[in-house]
Length: 250
Image (cartoon, rainbow, N blue to C red; front, side, top):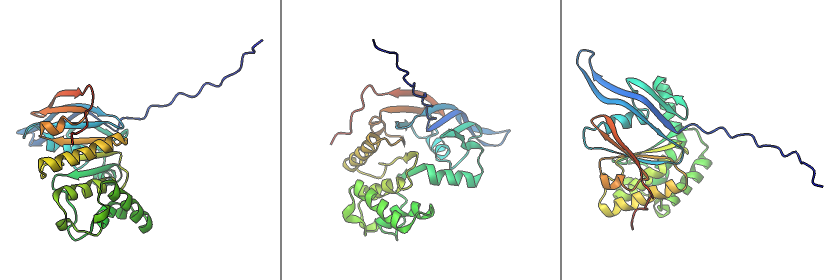
């Protein structure tokens, strides 16, 4: 005879909050009498591990949206929650802390410090986060190797190609293990072959579980992401998931 055994029921897992959530976000410039509305009621959510391209023509509101997502600016109305925290209500110091701890930036113009080496550029965010010198050197070395530049650690930006500089910028963006990598036109200054190399690197980061939000005007770049959000005249006009994410061709 088989006796009934008391089998403990595992506790239900509390779902983690989205990485970011925009609800009714508007951005208005100008005066009350002459307002210029740049973003109109933006609503969208990005979950952990997603790779999203936000695409739109010049004047669509991409730069304004980028500044809000990167905590470089605040919405005029609406809520922006990053890991559940409404960062729209934070003061300048609070926004600075969020940028430092939770967001890794990759810019079109690389924004590396010209007199620092590759190693030193990648270590810089960890220096400001007060990590030990030993920890900075070890982690920076691993990140530089990951982006394929272990042979360039002592070089400075003017000794590197555009693609190599962008790889350094990507390694730097990962230095403080951010919740999200926010990339602004990351291939804008690169030729087509180098652009494909950089986009393959983003593919690899996504496959390793990184959350990536990429801003671009280039439809071919946006098409490499599994999810594509289309922005026009300050409004979202499309939010589509690819049936199957194809890796960037070699």
